[in-house]
Image 1: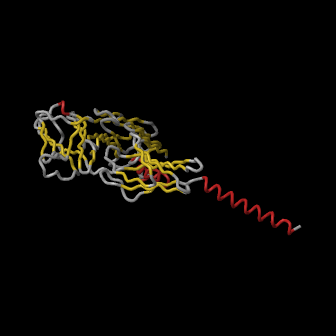
Image 2: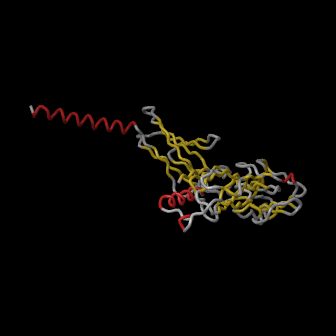
Length: 331
């Protein structure tokens, strides 16, 4: 009886092994890999690897325009118009007709940008202003070749009487800026071809203020709103700062320009600062509000210092706030 069972077990192991081999042949595993940082204006070689065998067909697709290239390797030079690109590799087994795909989100660094010549200056009407295409290669020595092209609001710039190009087109000068000159400016380099990070030229000063009570009470929820003259999430974004310490209380939340807080310690004060900024335009404005917590303060240092789990939550909330649009902290 024992001898008659052995071949059956051997047969089972062989079938199971064949099943594993067959499964691995059908389930191709794809991976996209590359070396170094992907930078606008510089070529990067991407490799699509797969367990699909043999002679599989690889097809690359990327960008909203639907570029397509065949081959297991792709050498691509981004032009800077996108900060991220969805790169997809499709693998087809012509023998079986089976296909699969893998996608990678590629972040692109752009070294070329449009900036105001004096970063600390605030653009104003009727005062000379220079926009500079920084990070661009030096201009061609031939005066007939312009290495930099300027764009305004997505269209090639038409020079007006108050504008001129200097330094091989690297500098766009406004002799006397007008309200009509406001807009989003880009520069395009030709060797290599790169579209820069943009600059939003605006002559309207930003006003920032924080609405909400100047005095609050322990255990009572209070709301504070950062009011800006710039359009939120279009012209500017806002972030909150706590330069005299993170708020202590039983509840705290931040969502974009709104802050909600339930303080827990009377006799203390809290400073809220709202910063409105536009990184592309290099502009920012801020307002600070000092809030008093009314009531009878507790004696000793216990009234102002959180301990144990509360201290850990305060620290965690502070770290999260620097990287998130919404934060909720319960003590």
